[in-house]
Length: 295
Image 1 (spheres, rainbow, N blue to C red):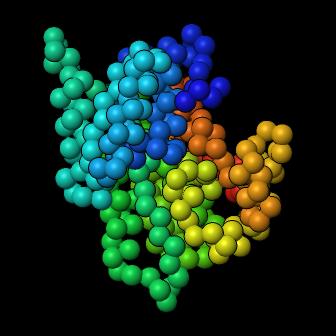
Image 2 (cartoon, rainbow, N blue to C red):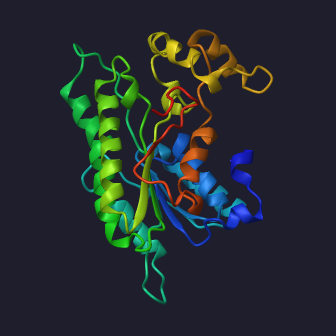
């Protein structure tokens, strides 16, 4: 949370003053880095988490943000893979942030970040993996948008950012479910950009590998073997021994380059949440160090 990308000067702190953001899957990893960045810009935030084991992390993050930036942060436990989960996030936000005087309530920013990874080859894939992957990565964001729709702005100031993956376009082996679900999320991004044109901009970002807990738990040698050709050709993945951590330097020797830091991926996401991104919608913004270039 102390990185230069989240500190900001006085102007940066006011950039999103008075705004409210919901970020799913935000107790750790990219989601937590997004929450920190938005809070540093003055935004009130809803921190969503799924498992009981993440409750203390979410609570600690909320306390740190309130102490550091004076922003309001609440935590909501809800499973984006359950039909009732997304609506419960909106309900909790409405209960906490509705203006007691005017009764008004508005959701300014939504970052659909929660996701699950499935790495299964055709011969090994399981129907349950498909159901879970598409429930969390596709249906969850759609249900959240449906629940939030009545509370989005009507002046195009809203910001929706969907966190996809470079796997949706690279055709990574074993990513039939994961890559396919993220491609569906990108397709919905374009549809929502048209449906919500008078309410909000809608964009997606497609990170490559990011140094998060999820990334750390991906099986090692096989994943490194598949990633190496891509990372070797990713301009910003070249390791910097005097700057990057020793663990990433060691990893780069086998994998061909380093993953992104969570705040690097979050910085692009949060840029799309600001007023400066008002003329960008329906796009998939490459947020992967150059692993994939725009076409």
